[in-house]
Length: 254
Image 1 (cartoon, one colour):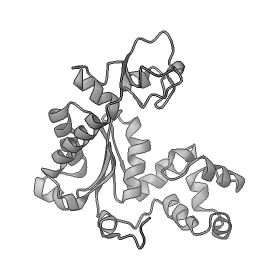
Image 2 (spheres, rainbow, N blue to C red):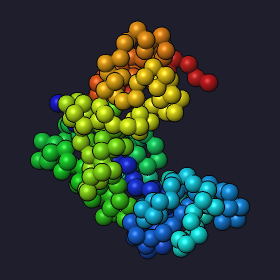
Image 3 (cartoon, rainbow, N blue to C red):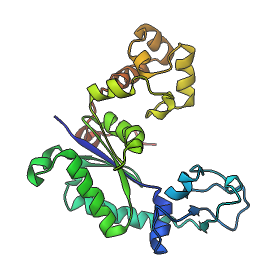
Image 4 (cartoon, helix red, strand yellow):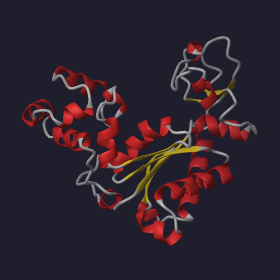
């Protein structure tokens, strides 16, 4: 059975700015925004403690309640790139680059299947180890999804890990069906944005369980070939592997 991790660096830009100031990202109130712009400027990131106070990520400065004292840090993109490169280097100490897919500056998928026996760890222990190494070397905390395919790994990160005391979530197809088929809103699921959710609602589909049992002809009429992806994901299926991603070659360039 395949085992994937999806490691996400918590409030990455804000965490970097906290670490650079010798502050704990989990307790310091900090936002990353350009102080020379108006209060309508967007905060690129807010620290976890700010989120705990109800401040939303990507909010505008004027939306932050006035009773909250916080530090405003000017964005330093090169600094964040340097930290991301250092963290990728930490993964490479233990995992081949062939088994890592960098999804964004603060998120990476890792196929740990070939390494569990080597390191004598299960998937959760491997996640704890890598997260611990990142924290030990950089001071940046992480969350992690564990899954038996790439889709379930991403959902375990985005939905399950948030409600776990250790910031680690796990999903296989059976657990996904049992725990998330009735989860709302649908926009919490990867690749379902407001537009797709609205079109599903027009078909009286409000949950993944309803999507799994929906009329497939209706779905294909509504979404075309994309219906195949929606149906697979409703059942927790995902055939694409990191090896497939690495082997992909675009037919055209633009």
